[in-house]
Length: 111
Ligand code: FES
Image (cartoon, rainbow, N blue to C red; front, side):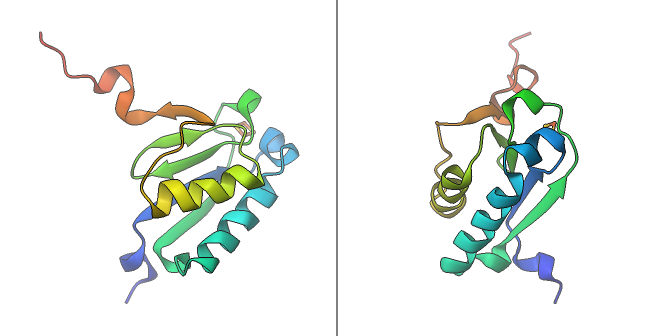
């Protein structure tokens, strides 16, 4: 069985310059530790990615398939993202940078 068969959430963490300065490494460690504590490690894939072009909002974390982007993520927020958004399915309001579901191009037009 592929490891992917159990994965329902994919988290992208920017590990480029500004986000690294904002402790992205610790963010990843905290998310992995929180997942492990809750027995969710195999259900979530965390990928380190390059610059997501939102450097002034570092550190950036994106959660899919919901398409929610978080800004200024620190260790405490990283834990909340796992416990509230990923496990309880309640996206955080704090630190929300962008929700792809509410992007203008996703709005249904009456035209
Ligand atoms: S360095 Fe993370 S968004 Fe650019």
